[in-house]
Image (cartoon, rainbow, N blue to C red; front, side, top):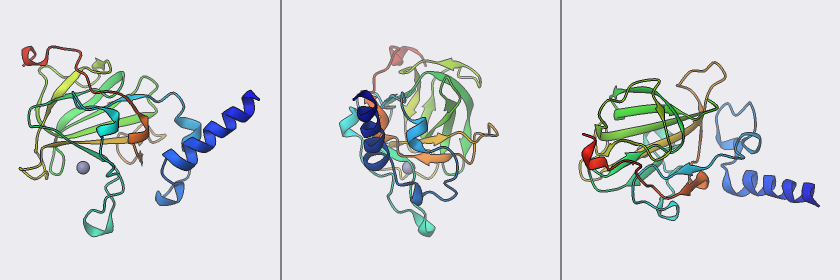
Length: 191
Ligand SMILES: [Zn+2]
């Protein structure tokens, strides 16, 4: 009986909650149902509940692309918090993402990408361990986000087998948000 329950759950995860593999270019590699069990993320914006996260992973973008990430609107200055335990990989800036952070989970299987941050929390360094809920910065509009629409652009990716932080397969993070966004620190005091 137990095994049938397990099979059922795998079917639910792969068929209903996760994107169809056929939508991913180059979808070779482990299936989502093999990798996702145990992945439980915090909504990476303080004060936002899982059920409030909008569904925009498949939203069209320019050039025939799709978004392949989750935009979470919030007032400018709202704390951005770590979605998971793990460690930081890169803190920096790029043209589209503005102020960005790459992080990974404790197993190194996933990449978490946070973009458009208004400001970084003080003292962030690559390699630094983080706990779920640690404040990483604040919501803003840096990069190509429109000034009137502050939001966090959050992307969950399977980390490539070569360990790169780029080129991972994007997964829709929404099914894995189980914890409401909540800051571990009194964020006003960490800048
Ligand atoms: Zn976005």
